[in-house]
Amino acid sequence: MIRALYSVLLWLMTPLVMLYLWRRSLKQPDYRKHWNERWGFYGKRTRSDQRTIWLHAVSVGEVRAAAPLIKSLKDAWPDHRILLTCMTPTGRATAQELLGDAVMIAYLPYDYAGATRRFIRQFKPVFGLLMETEIWPNLVAVCRARGVPLFLVNARLSAKSAAGYQRWHWLANPAFAGLTTTFAQSDADAARIAALGAQSVLVTGNVKFDFDPPTAKVSLGKEWRNALGPRPVLLFASSREGEETLLLDALSHNTLPADTLLVIVPRHPQRFDEVAALISARGMRCLRRSEWNGQDAGDAQVLLGDSMGELTAWYTLADVAIIGGSLLPFGSQNLIESCAVGTPVVMGPSTFNFAEAARMAVEAGAALQGADTAQVAQLAIGLLQNDAARHTASVAALHFASAHRGATERVLSELAQQLARTAPPTGSTPPAH
Image 1: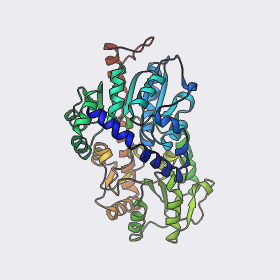
Image 2: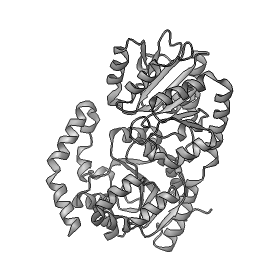
Image 3: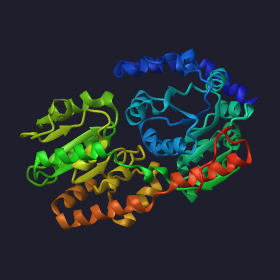
Image 4: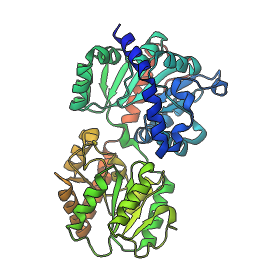
């Protein structure tokens, strides 16, 4: 009855959902594409007799984290096709860039019961993997009714989010209980998820540590570094709305090393023009990536990364990286990718999306954390001015990123064992570990 009421309320909200998509499309026209998939209509072109393994990753961060897992799934079950579903155009574009034709890419429909049934009927997955915190009551219920094992992978749940789910426990608890198994990032995540009703919870670590920096992007970043010469480079990576103003204000009250190039890469592409205008309004000389030939940046004070898919190159270029989403209460973006190329990290106070990784990075000396934006600016400038401290942090970052690898292998091993005990994909052999 509770889920039926939820479904009715969801249907009543449909005009608001459509209005939301339309408004998002004004700044990001790609929201107008693949509209029917949002309601579970995919057309005949995606039908196939080949058995399907389905993985859902909401947006860019989850897609990037899923890439090593997808490779391992393809190695383990080569006779199956992989379906990767997303919820955002940027996630879909990232999937296309990273994985190309190696996977099918589609939107997961909104959580209407009929739409989820059409989705399962269309693709007939032998099992599904949900990345991080994607819990949808109707989706879980439909998978359970259709006998599709559903696993929550790389699961994380902050205390704040757990409290939010608890307020809706009458709807959330049955959804968590309907999962086959949850593979959690940490003991704290596992405890919170189990308290919400999940029946089988295992701690396997964070698969984002298994990220392999793309060789081509690392080479590109090195080319940029050589072209720019000895200029110090401070990167503000995946900045969120409101954070650029805070950081620019904080930096204006400190003395940057001479000739420092500040690189700002906004998290969302629809904000590129907004951030460019913000920089120009301060009288700062701004050069956009779309106008830059990758060689000398001239007298530019700020380089705006208005491109997609080059974050690894930006991390490789930088001497120090400030992680976006951590200055304001967004929970931080992924700090592990910076560490993976040996670039020291500075974070703000908000890191609940990466709480365990942030804590361990600080303990390892791979990252510094400021209590506010002013302190973040001071810490970043301190690293830029101290070659020895920066080198030590760089070595620590590389070691930190490599020391915690292996979550993907642990997930695949447990997954294979559980499928072997229940209903393993026909014609496949579980991977040996």
